[in-house]
Image (cartoon, rainbow, N blue to C red; front, side, top):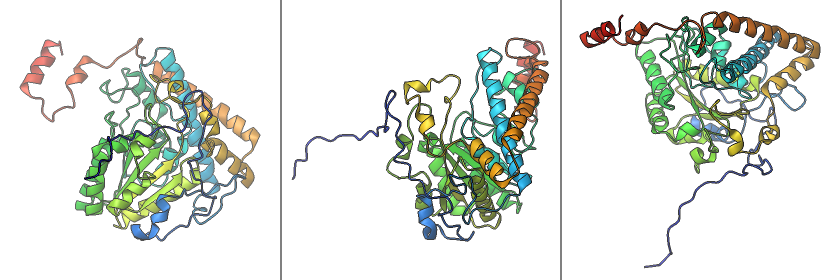
Length: 410
């Protein structure tokens, strides 16, 4: 019997701590256009390499190159840029509103706008997203009214959820946006179950699940992959790898798998990694996965390689766990600026038009904010009725709730 000494536990460490020099040398970036586009019915084992590379369309010069390019028209691209700019302006105003005490909580999308805005354009009416709190671009890109989003954030008298949900946890069945759950990873099992039900009913609608890198450590993530692969559920399994959970770097949740996309391979699920700051690449990969689902070819796991520029939320101080200059060193750039550069190169945009669009969008967001604030904010104006606490829980209100409502004076 060999004495090997005492056991020790491996705890992954980030490449750099606050005060250090940002280091993204571990992010291996493929040349734009270099990753092949497989047939939509390709088997997972035949495209293993796509779980370790990064699909990119836009190169450093702003050109769209390679087999994943060419799906979007000039109008589509201009619209996509405007959606991302709108989400960014919306974020700025709502972050300011939280600092002013008009709402209790807010979460930004800064640096991640391309992921949800581009993905939404690959879906059809009736498809259902099961999002986390950083996919508001799914609503913006589907023309959901900003005033309604703000009413929900303020929990005012016109809040469509009647004050029964945390700020930024939207819900809209008509826009394919399932009610957000603050308990992350539930989105995966819910989406797979919804997709299975759609298939059982011989429907044509597919589902999309959303999760962050940190939440892939939850058991729901793995349970969902078992059912999705076994029953070939018509679902797209999205992992937004923005490098950080709340305050732990992505290596903690990733473990020894190399990439998050690679986890799909163990379940026989085709898996791809895509440049999450490249609007064209995100849209193209989403279309590929959506076609697979619609053709009964089963699920696809997509990892979006991006970076959370801002804090996790208004309750977070990222300077406590990462260098202040880290976002400036992120090698995949800014999704808004990259698409802007591409449009200018195509001759369908200009610096002047961009400045004008920023002003127009800011005016639209401010106008929406003023309209929402007419209905109240957290500390002023109208609020939902206490009666609403008791509504929408049961199809028929049970006697004990009816009695409680009456005691409350409603």
